[in-house]
Each structure stands twice: as C-alpha cells, then as structure tokens.
Image 1 (cartoon, rainbow, N blue to C red):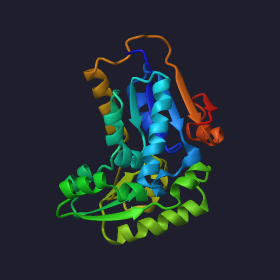
Image 2: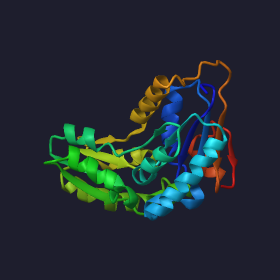
Image 3: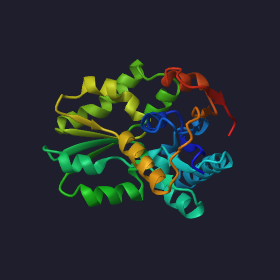
Image 4: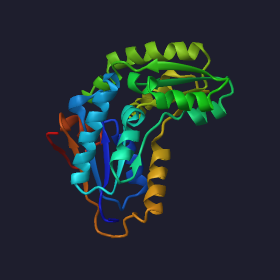
Length: 259
C-alpha cells in the first residue's frame, strides 16, 4: 500500500494550493488530483449535493488505488467528511478554516474570515468557532463570486479587485489583525490581499498544516512511500485544463477527465 498514490479532490483548481504543499513536503509520493470544476463552486450547494459529489470523487480515487484521500475543499470537509470516514476504510484528511491560531494570537480581538457560504453555515465551522473564539469578534464574509473568477482564469481581473475591496474594507475598518482564508482557492489571492491589507494583518491558510497532518497520518499507518522510483503525478480536470495548467505554472502534466 505504501507505493499507492495520495488522492486529492476539490471543487476545482483551488485544492492545488494544498497539493503543492503536500508535494513539497513529500516529494517521493505519487499523487492523483481531481479538479471537479464542472460542479464548482460547492459553497452554494446543499449539504446533500456536497455529500453526493464528495462520494463520487472519493470512489473515483479509490478505484485508482489511493491509500489516503485529502478532501482539499473546506466546504466538502465541513459538510461531508464525517460521512466519508464512516463509509470508507482509508484515512481522510480534511481542511478546516484556521480559526484556532487566529483566535489565540489576535491582539485586537477582531479576526476576519473569508470563506464560502457552505463552510460558514456548516455545523463544524460553528462548533470550531464556539470552541476557540469565545470573546473574539469574528467577522464572517462569504466570498461570493471569487471561485468562479479563479476557475475561469480571472485571478487578477478588475472584477476580482472590486470584489475583494468590497469584502475586505469592512474588516479593515473593524481593526482585524488576522485574516483567515476558509477556501483552498483563496491562497492564490494572497499577493492581491497583501497589497490591500495593513501590514499588521496576518493572513492564515491551512496548507502547511494539512501537509504536516498528511505526513503524520501516513507515517502512523506505515504508508509513507519508500520506493525511490520517479513519482507519478496525475492531475485531472473535468472542465478546463488550460486554467489548471496555468495556475500550476505548467509544471505538471494535466488531462481532461469526464467525471
């Protein structure tokens, strides 16, 4: 099993931010990545729809022999990962907004979170916030429209700049000192956000923490790849491989796959 691939899925290309972190930490591992861009964004879908799509992606990765599955989507994690863990025997790694470190480190006692509607309305998100952010003002902002712009290659467009300004300005006025990114698409916004935000604001995403957790779970289950052959990396999109290639700087082979 140790020579089997790590499976990763997301509602599109955003989870490549997680893939890159894991690949950097575990360069000997094989990977299969699914960008379910045809059904993006997951954030405006019902819980039942999100669970259905997550099952479809999981079973495709299992058919490919994946030894562990990373749900590289905050919305799918918060709505579907409990079900997936009950239904399937392989380990699952999920993605949660990093509210805990922001709440523990804030000095202004005000933190912002930019996330999808599906994540912000989930029971898991509210449970985490209630547990760690007592006494902290959490400004929640649905990032409506961001994912479709990233998925269509409009990361640095005027539309994106206008959206982000509208979402971020109220947080700046409220004196946030931490901004939590609650969607795996959003780390690609960091260069833009850094120009908008005061220098005192720290941006937090979950990428490195997820990579370390993946490494720890593989090690605990004796699943780290010990074979020194060249890693096999397959990245699939069911919509537009041009955008997928572009966001990965054409470093990896990508293919269209109907799923």
